[in-house]
Length: 51
Picture (cartoon, rainbow, N blue to C red):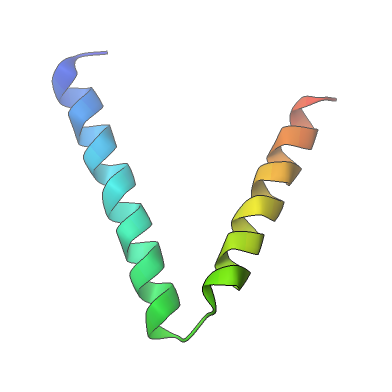
């Protein structure tokens, strides 16, 4: 993967994470609920790979 693609991907991921946190704080979502949703999603995707 060329360096420019890698850096662009990293910038996009950081931007998406920042927007997700900003939106969660803007609508008043507790950080614990956001963390639980991320944990549940990670667990779901991890268990899908075991099949």
